[in-house]
Amino acid sequence: MTNQASLWNLEEGKRLRDKGMARVLSHTELGWRGDFERVFHELIMQGRDITAEDVTARVGMPPSHVNPNAVGALFRGLCVRHRLTKVGRVKAQRASRHANEIVVWGKR
Image (cartoon, rainbow, N blue to C red):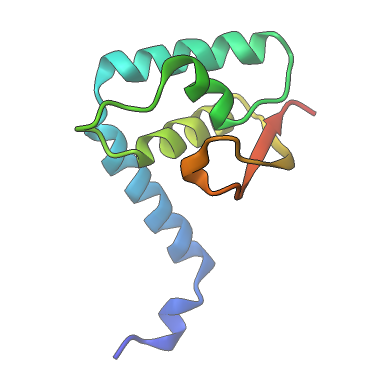
């Protein structure tokens, strides 16, 4: 049985998030990753608020042999590195996201 205290531990959750992000990015194709980063930088240089969908709409999803979690891991890492903050939420446009809400990031 799982230790109940370990289920409600924010710091452990952050550690596991960072570990998972690092793991998926270590297996992400450099060509796609470079394209993703380039488009991300182009969009933030325009001074606009962005979502991960804004980037993937231009570069596409990762190749089929790459974990699709690479999108979120790479996007979140870039947002943190560039000191973007969460400024809102919108409905996802990509059908496979089932119209769930995604975070909008921007400089404030």
